[in-house]
Amino acid sequence: TTQRGCEWTTARWSSGSSSPGAVKYYFYTWRDDGIDQTIHDLLRWQVREMARRKADPSLVVLDTQSVHAAAGVTAESTGRDAAKKVPGRKRGLAVDVLGLVIAVVVAAASAHENAVGIALLNKVADDTDTVQKALVDQGFKNAVVAHGEKVGIEVEVVERNPAQSGFVPQAKRWVVERAYGILMLHRRLVRDYEHLPRSSESRVDWAMTAVILRRLTAATAPAWRTA
Image 1 (cartoon, rainbow, N blue to C red):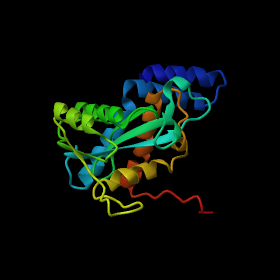
Image 2: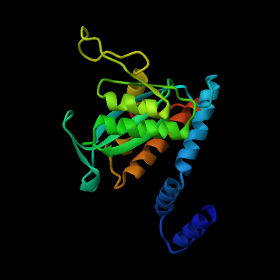
Image 3: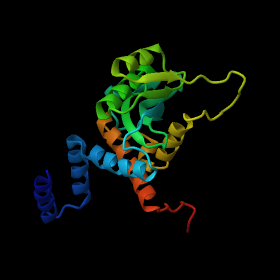
């Protein structure tokens, strides 16, 4: 892959094409080869080890987020989230207690929470053999709990206290909300601009890779207010 990419890049530059063509080429090549997720996972393991934790977690937190799709995104891969009134796509994340992404799934916004939750559990089970429990909110139903039993993951639905009003962070589950907030700081993820859901998943991996690199190097990103 590297040799093929170098040959293609050399040909593009020799013909006077700009470097963004090479960036686009590698984005799609690494997406198809799974290199994007490999890089992300290798760095994620280092962050967990720095926190004196095992490379893979035993607990994950699942949640979804619906975002608008750009005008150029094909209608076949988008839909409308009836509950949130959002036309576009739905992102599903499984994160550990540090807020690091373990699995990501992108589907049409019309997809039910159960469908996204089941897909996330499948990815978590396929990629790790250490996860024993998953926390979800009340948007996920019994189908997700039943599927968790099939793949060996106990799914607990964290119910909200009916006496509470407004937004109240729930213990452990708040880390996935924070992860979504961090992702929204990346301009490319404010909307879904990708034609393929797999490309959208890759964008999430790269955004979280940037976050992980800042954690590893103790670097801080300058605020947009900074002159």
